[in-house]
Length: 92
Image (cartoon, rainbow, N blue to C red; front, side, top):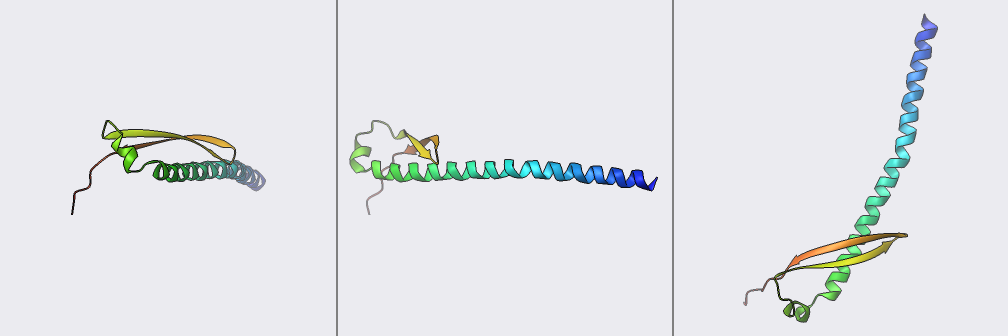
C-alpha cells in the first residue's frame, strides 16, 4: 500500500516536472518575441520623428494620418503602423 502511494506521488512529481520543463522554453520564446516587437516599435517611432517635420505636416490634407514602417529585428520582419493626429499649437 505504501509503495503504491509512493509510486503515484513520484508519477505526479514527474508529470509536474515535465510540464514545467516544457513551458519554460515557450515562455522564453514569448518573452523574446515581445522584446523584438518593442524594439521594432521604438525603431519605427524614431523613424517617424525623423520623417515628420513642419513641412510634411503642412502638406497633409487631413488632420489624421497613418505611416507604415517595415522593420527587421533579429531576422524577423515587423509591420508597424503609427497613427497620428495633426494639431496646431496655440501661439504664446
